[in-house]
Image 1 (spheres, rainbow, N blue to C red):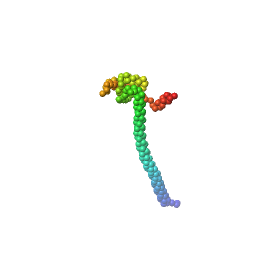
Image 2: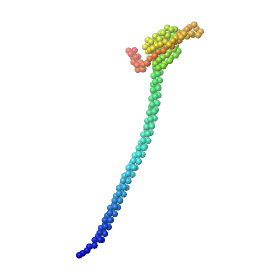
Image 3: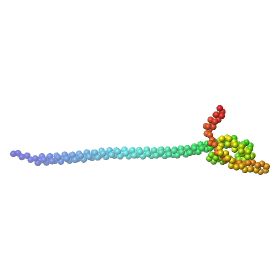
Image 4: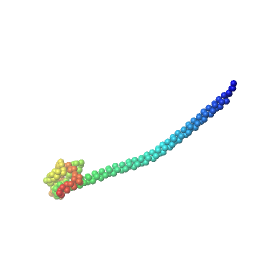
Length: 198
């Protein structure tokens, strides 16, 4: 009977298995290393991109902050200009109103028989002080104020005799209060003038 010694074959096979396992292990390590390196590279690229985006965003934020600061300054300046314009308009309106008021009062005065010494305007009320030749002149002036329909609530606050020194003449000092008119706008005045012409 022939005997075959299988020990060298088994030993060789065992060595081969060990070599294969070592090769697989080394290949696995290499593959894992490559995968880790690749993943690390991808992460580094993402970090670089994100860092760049953050820098770009910071630059844009700084730019927009500067623009916002300029806009805020412009708004502030516009607000100041608007206030100044409103004050100018108000002054212009008041100036025209005072001119119209004085003009209307001049038309209602009794010529050569009276004159004003002071005007006081508060809100819608007016107080006029003056000197007249006599009580009839004061009464005529009050009648003119009432009939003009420009003024309402005409009241005589009082009269006092005013003696002129060096002459034998006694005048009447008077105080009259009334409500002033709501003066028309320039556009309305033009319409009225056109109607009068036609």
